[in-house]
Amino acid sequence: MPLLEALGVGKRYDARWVLRDLDLAVAPGERVALLGPSGCGKTTLLNLLGGLDRPDEGRTLFRGEDLAAAAPARLARLRRECLGTVFQFFHLVPTLTARENVELPLQLLGWARPALEARVAELMEAVDLGGRASAWPREMSGGEMQRVAVARALAARPALLLADEPTGNLDSASGERVLDLLAALTEREGAALVMVTHSDAAASICHRVVRMKDGRILDGAP
Ligand SMILES: Nc1ncnc2c1ncn2[C@@H]1O[C@H](COP(=O)(O)OP(=O)(O)OP(=O)(O)O)[C@@H](O)[C@H]1O
Image (cartoon, rainbow, N blue to C red; front, side, top):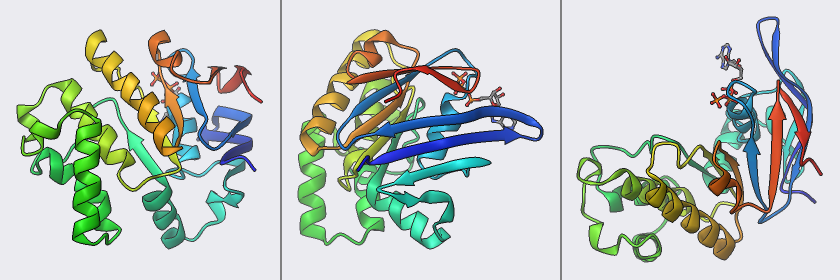
């Protein structure tokens, strides 16, 4: 069974359809890049896949479960346990240290202290920030903040990571480092990745490139 499936999905704002009749399936552990011109609907699709938004036609299924039909509490739980997100502008909590940012999703899930601390330490090492755990976001470079964001997104061992232009605000060297980590850590943890990007370097760490135009998929669909 695919991990994630969009079946005939569409989304409109007022009378204007910005996605139409779109099909996409993502296998467990698969990395998919979503490419396409500005405004073609990539972020809209990512929001539907993550259950942040509901389609106006079609269905999005996570492990066969219709996200739009899930009760709000069920959806919140599914997102907390199974889904990690990485954004262009990092979205770290500015009043928490690097370590505390990574801890946050595990605290929300009620992890016990010893397991939580071991997992956070492991991830801080994995993103090569073992020595920066007590740093505040304002003291970190963009690349460091994004590495913290990657560690946070993977903390709860989600089956799916959604990333929206994760290198869009980084210089190419920092961006490459973040991409290498995204590939290595999703591989190691068995997480699938769906990544919106404009960058060929980002697409190159994916198993499959899906090109979109005007709210539809041009190629790369299964
Ligand atoms: N809340 C909204 N209300 C009305 N229109 C919207 C809304 N959100 C997005 N749109 C429109 O939907 C279309 C798709 O937007 P979306 O952000 O998904 O594109 P994108 O491919 O991610 O673009 P970019 O690469 O520039 O981020 C655009 O025309 C956008 O203006």
